[in-house]
Length: 323
Ligand code: ADP
Image 1 (cartoon, rainbow, N blue to C red):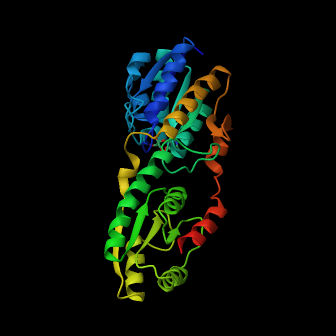
Image 2 (image 1 turned 90 degrees about the vertical axis):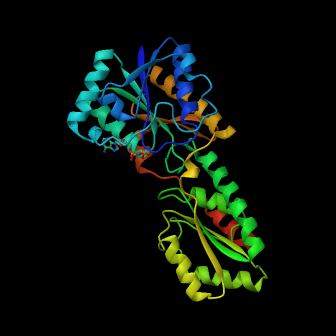
Image 3 (image 1 turned 120 degrees about the vertical axis):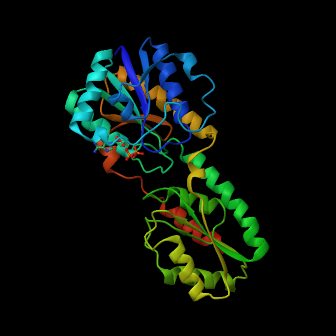
């Protein structure tokens, strides 16, 4: 390959910039021309390309978000949109794409590659950690630490006022952020979509905590949790325990931003490098990931379809250590 394009698409995550930097610098090292494409697949369609060299990615390893900007492109979901995108690639002689994003981004890359034979490789960039084929996704570790810091602060208030806090964390349909931040902050209970929860069990946990002499509690709730909205949970708990002083906190988008953690910068560097190496070796329609400290390429199809399992042992540990 002689010319590649790199884009970030879907939800942004801390460390995407470090991945862009790694792609651009690895390409430069191997004398491959590199183009940045702005605003995800929208830039492909609207011909928003910029030639990138090693100096265009200076000082971005510390930055959250993505200098290339991200977007959700409805046009790319249409055959006409993808045709325009292909024509723009042909015009520049770009023969491969590095797509940094989540499963939606990979779905788009796969369809595009199947239609036009363009070589694509995915890099998992999402805080949710919901992509198969890599132990961690880029941004997950940073989001986890942001959630942990925030919950630590909430705990100070919880203990000072004997309050019960319901804290919602991100993760879409996955409970990785909730489970790990919950354990790290000593949450009384952790509600995640991968585990069948019930109000009765939650109430039983509150009763057990009371008996054990706990006077304040934090319940971490994953946004994809199935029991109901966090506000419904708080209301139900108030009905069951009228003397509880209950508060709800939705952490929201602070979890998506901020300077990437060391682990995310290293992971992004490994995967950005790995993506370019993969393309040079002739890989296509695969995602670069790290599993047990090894660079692996997983077919995009599998990365989209399969899911990383929650560590059931962590659930047991969280229950034992909470009281
Ligand atoms: P994420 O990559 O974070 O999961 P999205 O689900 O929003 O984010 O997907 C990002 C973009 O990928 C979409 O806005 C769209 O441009 C493209 N995409 C997603 N699914 C498809 C699809 N089935 N066909 C074509 N493009 C798609």
